[in-house]
Image 1: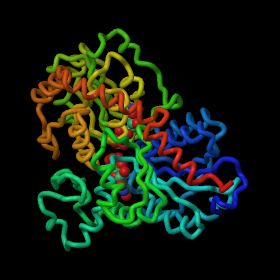
Image 2: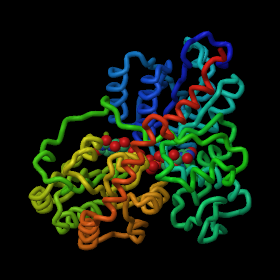
Image 3: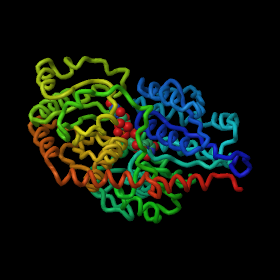
Image 4: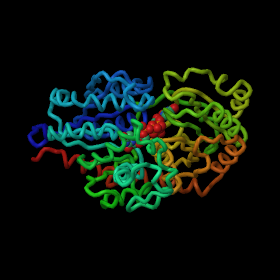
Length: 460
Ligand code: UDP
Ligand code: UDP
């Protein structure tokens, strides 16, 4: 199964994403990049997907890349009532993890023989023992920030020194990194009985057994974390952490254009979106609408009322209330459903992004030099917001975290501040230039991918 016996010209690499657009999107971008560099690529998918958007993007992807092999993975039956989680995405992670015994026959059915697997971080601890038995190199694609990776690899050792997470002090000192306030830790991870927490800790322990960690970031965005990880400060024995970011949005992701943007002055529009799976309370959504009106700015606002798109059925008039819908439509575009975020962020009319700080959104904002107003809600988003602020990509009002209702007045003021801050715009433009350099010839992303090829190419 290992690469050394293969007679193929190009390495054959299989990618195994897990569920949710935040995981699938970077995998498909990486698959596209590797295919364009003449790797032989297989993408393994499972069905049904949790959201409609995932199945839609997969079909556009495979139509755009007929040279990439699509392989379906059939999940073993799994009873969700046996685990402590109701989150459909986390339950899907678990269903895939428990189906790991089916991997060996799947890999043996692939031709030419695999040179390596790239596995999503959420699946790492259940897949690594299997690939190790097969002597198949297994790289992890980490879909969040390097700071979050540092936390993932450090957290198991912290847990081993305590009996209860209440013993964790107000500040966490990860070796090689500046101190992280406890409030930035995904709250879910403080409950050790939760499914996500057990997966997270197991993945954090096992990641050192992988051949390398590919990560969607670049040096100028996260110098401190990348340095600490690669100098072995965070945890000893970690394989190379290879920054291959930013993973650039591709044509297969394109949706229909938002023509309204073409009529707006340069840099005048703020884009507001909380990603593919973060819904706010109705009360908070309405305050946000009031805030947008009060800001006096033009805007594109995607309203998300439910975690999974198949359940997000309520009309805008019901979510916002009739009066508010009329008000917001005077100044901007408000919609529900899926928008082509790449099209919005790349548009010259757009210069600000109010975001939950899902890592793909942060990376896309950096790619286009759009300043962010970070409004993290849960999970890794607080740690990512910290990266946004420290890198200069945006501002973060920390008091907005924690589910407290933020009033429209305050939201409006901050959005105005974001849109008027020239200093922030310059910093974001600098990050855009650095992001472009990272993917250019000789840049960190190109060098990282060349290293991967060198490691996998059959010995000549
Ligand atoms: N996205 C999009 N349109 C939408 C919502 C999200 O294109 O209406 C894309 C966005 O560009 C990003 C991904 O979906 O690539 C969401 O990933 P992210 O890590 O930002 O957040 P998550 O959805 O995982 O919370
Ligand atoms: N993650 C991880 N180990 C795990 C599960 C998740 O390191 O076992 C990371 C992963 O990179 C992800 C982040 O934690 O981006 C947050 O998880 P997830 O994407 O599921 O939640 P979301 O951001 O969509 O709310």
